[in-house]
Image 1: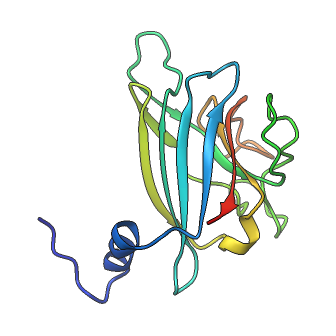
Image 2: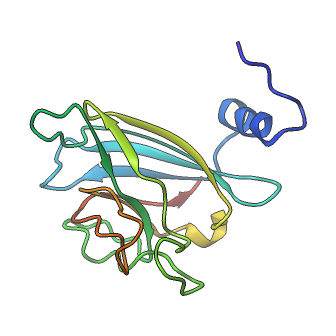
Length: 164
């Protein structure tokens, strides 16, 4: 059993994940390219600023002879998850920065036999500014270089971020 200092952000994150109600959530569904993809994302506002994001997915497509692979993940401007997810707009980027510094640029998901679980902290967003936007999962990992969106290929999963 790990013991966390009572004054650390790590302890704050653990307390949020185990005791608190998230501030927002997204129900993720796949499209025709990933019909088994489903998941949940939870967004916790941090009192010190920023957001703790918890995301769990299953049914991520597997490539032949691979049990693990990476998938890009971003917050997009518009919350319209009508397949094929072409109405979500660009990455959420209120400061008009270059990729990968957009507020909507998120870490990649690591799929293990189609399942992923990820918790991360970001100070690039606040809950009130992402409500109604789309959380998108892409078919390839973000390369963190290619402009404007990291060459993460097709949008295969989408969930509208809603307030709890």
